[in-house]
Amino acid sequence: MAYDLKKESDVKEYIDKLGVEYRFGCYSEKKPEACHLLGDYLEGIKKDFEKASKVYKSTCDDYGYAKSCYKYGNYSFLGKGKSGGKGEPRVAYEYYEKGCNLNDSDACLHSGLLLVSRSMPKEIDRNVPKGLEFLTKSCDMNNATACFYLSGMHISGVQKKPEDTAASSSGGSVISGVNSTTTASKTPKESEYIVLKDMKKAFQFAHKACELRNMYACANLSQMYARGDGIEKNEKEAERYKKLALEMQEEIKKQQETLGFQQGVGMPN
Image 1 (tube, rainbow, N blue to C red):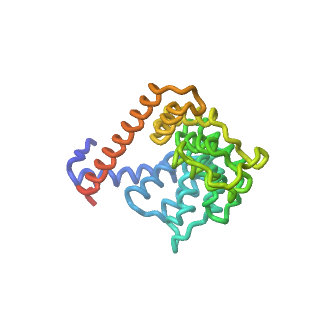
Image 2 (cartoon, rainbow, N blue to C red; image 1 turned 45 degrees about the vertical axis):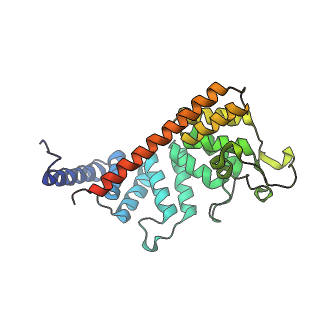
Image 3 (cartoon, one colour; image 1 turned 30 degrees about the vertical axis):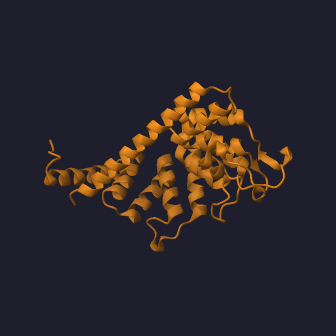
């Protein structure tokens, strides 16, 4: 049957049919892909986060479907779909790690960030070496954000005692870019670092992240070329990556404006 998606009645019928197909594929045919799509349907169309959470969890537990592990990790971290809405960081980490072991790059990114960050919940024990492994795996799978964070970690280095410097977390140095500086009163020894400062590695990770369309990595790359940090100084390349970062920024701005317009128009119930 052909649907006229300009007609509200046809849109409603089409959406309802999708739900039936996903339920049949999940519960009758036992297809994990259909179960995950059912979770997405319950989340995005029906806004039934409690049921979506249960579907993602069972699809991860019963079928080892990596994307569902990642989604249930998100739900657990935010407390989404749960009475009271209280997050469970420890449970979230377990599902992120499971998703990472099943080769989902976003799950690797989030499990890595939970382990390396100083600002994450106390339920998570900081483990920078293990977190670095997860982030590296994510970057190897072409996750731009993971590559970006790895670049930042090598720009500032990561100390064994994070309170020794304001720039020791992976997030702090990354967001503020190459210009970030350490506020410690004395220069730490190499033995005090878990991850050594290494501008060559920082450049390599930033370059990959930029090629994968991470705007902030491109901005950092521009500064690295301008200063000769981790790469030979090259004003032409610095200007090229600066222009690329600005173009990406403009693209994101236009996308946000379009999304805001679409939300304002509204969709039929």
